[in-house]
Image (cartoon, rainbow, N blue to C red; front, side, top):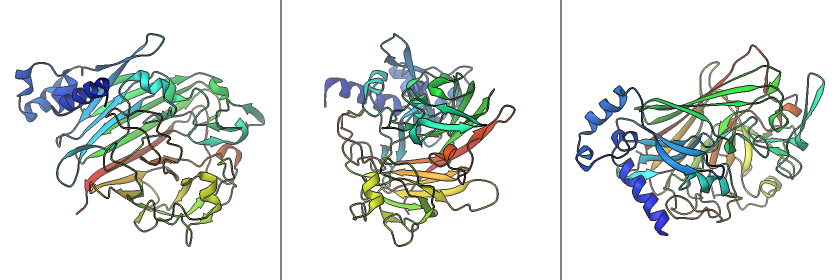
Length: 399
């Protein structure tokens, strides 16, 4: 581990260990560190403004900042305004040890220069892929920025993960990011105003509430692209994690990972996670879909559990930590990605590399390529309408 990584890890450890006072009051004096957690939380929540920590500068001189959410259990989620992204998420494991379950970088420069720009980012204007970078809306064809072979992925070459978001942290439990995507940015029509509120509850839930409005008909599909390892960042591969996905069908893809338009049953295939199953149990099975995705990189069609409200989309358990993450969402789909394109080219904040399959993603979403697939749920947003959706990642330990 380099001196830079050691320094960053010490800063994170020192600050995160202080609860709300640490990051919200910039780790001030040693005497202040000795204040009770109750007093710190009370002071943080009663403060008129919550302090932010510098996170480095981009090449153009723009400074990024860190914002930390803390609950009464000392669970902490840290975000940056560059990409509206989740940098760190500290939750207790089965032994009570605080464990960082989200892969993140040591500073904004590392995010701006890494080979996978999506770590922890808020994704838009359209999460996942749009075939051939084109779609037709109200009789007009739009040509988008392509960045994934012939396709558009996660909003194009400069998606929401590469922009600075306006950030506000009203209290110790929430942070609000806002961004205006201008008309024809990356080829998408309409001035799209996006607001994302991240909230950490006392039930150890990280809640994500999305809103968007537009002045022209457009398409919208927002999500968060956190990379998880419930055994802790840098703890090895995720193949022993036990995964359950509440879906009887998924959307098969072609060789470029564009859905064929069909819904295929998971029963009798390596895609059946209806019961808790190790991620690695069938990942090397000879299967055309696994070949196309180089592993799991597929959208699951969630079983709607009730007419209104959230669906329990998935549950994952860290095989070493005992940490359980349940995913709830209003979205119809869930993209399960098993870290197939991680190549060890980037260094995480703790000094470990982003090695092959050392993290996974569970991205709540509408289906890939929906603008070109009439049978899929619509992603069209019109003037006068408000796009709203929510997702919750809830953490506990295995009993």
